[in-house]
Structure formats: structure tokens, C-alpha cells
Image (cartoon, rainbow, N blue to C red; front, top):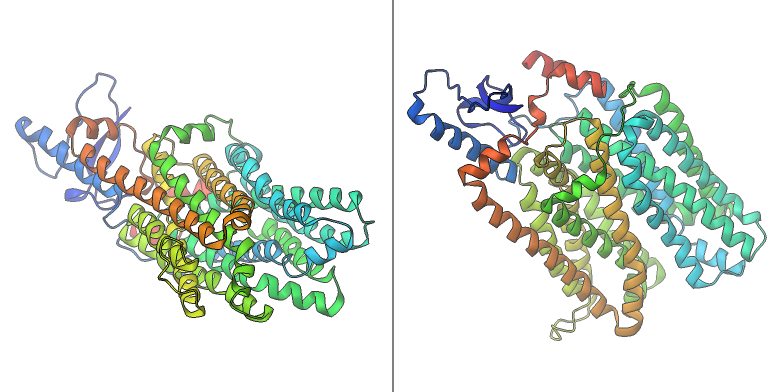
Length: 522
């Protein structure tokens, strides 16, 4: 089966094709050359040139500097079902982020009272990301076989239940039993979180095929708010009624959200498909490797700051309250700018450019955060540290928000089908990459700070971002030249699966959502 351009006025996923052409399947059993339809007869002499021109335009769009759609995403224009879907996922993401971050203010002290060392406390924090790293790609690969909606609802419910159980650990005897129960609760909570986060990204990618980065940006807005208010809520509830209250409240909210999701969310992908391809297929794309390196670098730097920034700020003579306020700066800027970067990625299709720019620009602010020993003339002052945290929050958002769409582009270039199974694999891979960096950051970063100081640790973060950003930039530059060659373009033509050529019937059957506005437009 091959593809040939058809003049039907539809748009491809990469943008508008020249002369309004899009690609549709045609039979090539006799290995015939694809024909170009332009609304008038084309001579055999210029047929090949037209094919080259069309393919060159399409590959240029996919690499990412032209408009993805002429429409702009608006919450007011989407259907009621989609609004409910976004609301439920926003609440779940908020609670999950708050649950993850609320441990910081009081859990280390309580665990120490039960005879737990600081090393073991760090492992209790880190086991969450390790389990998520290992489980996410497996969950993504088997998502459609297990059931997408079931994974989401079960994941939210399990995560909420484990949060409540973590609050009950206050009554556990100290020592070894307490440590084992902490690891069990965090492990099960990580499995539930990996299930609902992986399925939520896949569901949204299928329900909003034209605005993936924008919708992801809205979700990250609530995730950032959850990371901001989690420590504050945890500390406040802990001060009021003790250790268990913050876990009981947030865990109950998550369970209620899971129950409501079961009844409110439409039926998703009811046919349990046999697994036809695994996440390992994604690794055949060099583009996916480079994007993964950027994601790991970004999450590594975030988790590095969470583990080491407090002691660094205390050197400025700041109080604990002031340090807590400083911790709010990066997630606040991350949350505020996430929808903006998502809108730019979807409306302008600057996917690769945003990922590259985010990595390179964030590295500058990590150098000033230390400051780096390579720049001894930079002062270690409150204003420079504050400015650095602002830049880090903005440009890490620029790096991470479009990266999901970038991996999806890499999957399409591998010829992976445009369906919920592919979205699940991509979502699991994305979550796994993020968790890997989040797990490695506190461990290696803390060790480097203990031996060489915070300045060298922040320099390492800057180096990781620079290397991953430059490698991706070189890859994009090289492949632009290759995509201009006719032979390569014709090979790519046979592999692409464009999401924007999907019929509304197909989208409705697989996601359960169709906008009346879109149906009327088509």
C-alpha cells in the first residue's frame, strides 16, 4: 500500500500541503508511481517534479516550522464531553502532583522518629520514580489490550488508596516494619500513577489530535499548581491535626475523582486489541533517542534542584519560610507558561525548535544559579538566584511541553499506525524518560554536591542540557538536507500516517469524542 496526494482541501498533521493536497492510500500492487491531482491534467513530463515538490513541502512541515492548523484551540468551542474529560484529568493531575510533593515538609522528620536513616528516606522518595520508569513503557504497550478507561480509573483509585494508606503508617511500629510498609505503599502508588498518567496522555492525544501540545500544556498547568500547593497543604494540614490528615484528604479526593471518571467519561476503545508492536520499536528512530535525551536532562535538572536547592539558599541567610517561597518560583513559571508553549507548538508547529531552544536557554540559567565555577565573576546573590529560577521554570516548560508531540512525530515517521495503541506506547515512553531523570537527579546530584559543591552540580545540569540540545539541533539540520533529496522523500512517503486525514467517524469510534463544529466544517 502506498500513498498519493489528492486534491481535497484537507490538511495533514504537519500543516497545509502545497495546492491543498493531502495523502490518501492507493493500491500499488503493480508498483505504479503515485499520481498528482491538482485539479487539472498534468503531463507525464512534469509529474515527477510535482511529486518531489509536494513531498518536499510535507517533509519540511513535519520537521516543524509551518502551521499545524489554521484553527486555534479554545476551551469555549470544544464539546461538553471534552470539557468534562479535561476537568477530570486536571483534577487527577493536580491531586497526584500534590500527593507527590506534600511529603517534603514533614515526612523526613516523622520517619526519623521511627528510626529511619536519611539514606533510606531518600530511597523512599526515589522508589516512586524508579517504579514509574520501569512500569510506564509496559503499561503503554499493553494499554489497549487491558483497556484504556479501565487503566485510567483503576490507576487513579489505586493511587488515592495508597495515599490514604501512607497516612495510616503513622500507627505502624518503627524500624524495619515501617520501612517495608513505606516501600510497599510508594511502589503501589507509583504503579497507579504510571497507569493513569500514561493512559491520560494517550486519551487526550486521541481526543484532541490537532492540539496535543496545547492540551498537554493545560494539564501541566494543573500539575505545576499541584507541585506548588502540595507542600503548603501538607504543612498546613499536618499542623492542624497531625500526620495523617493531608494523606486522608488528598487520597479521598483522588478516589472520588476516579469513581466519577468511571461514570462520566465516555467508553474508550472497547475492543481489546492484540499487542502488535512494542515500545522497543520506537527506539529504531534516532530522532526519538535525541528527544528522550532532552526529556531525561530536563527532569534530571528539576529533581536535582528539589533535593539540593534548599541548603544552597540557606547559605544566603534565608529563613525556612523564605526558602519555601523560593521553591514556588520554578513550578509557578512552569505552570503559567505551559499553555503558551503548547499553543505555539500546535499553532505554529515549532516543535523541534521549542525543544532545542528550551534545552539551550535553560542551561544558561543553571550556570548562573550556581554560579558555575567556570564563571567566577558572577556573584552569589539573591537577585541572581531568583532570576535564574525564573528562567529555569520558563524554559524547562518550553523543553518538556512539545516533547510529547516530538516523540509522536518520530513514531509516525517509523510508520506506526495512527491509533490509541500508538498513543499509549508514546505516552508510556515519555513518562518513563521523565521518571528516569527524576530518579537519577537526586541521587547523583546530591552526591556531586557533597563532594564538589552546588556550583559544580548546577554546571553538570547545564552541561546535560547543552549536549542534548546541540545534538538535537545538529540532527534536525542534517535531516533537513536529506529530506530535500527526492529518493529519501519517496521512501518517507510510504511510511507516514497523517493524523489529520482521519475521518470524523474513525475519531469518534476510537476516542468517543467529536465536536459538532468540526463535523459541520467537514
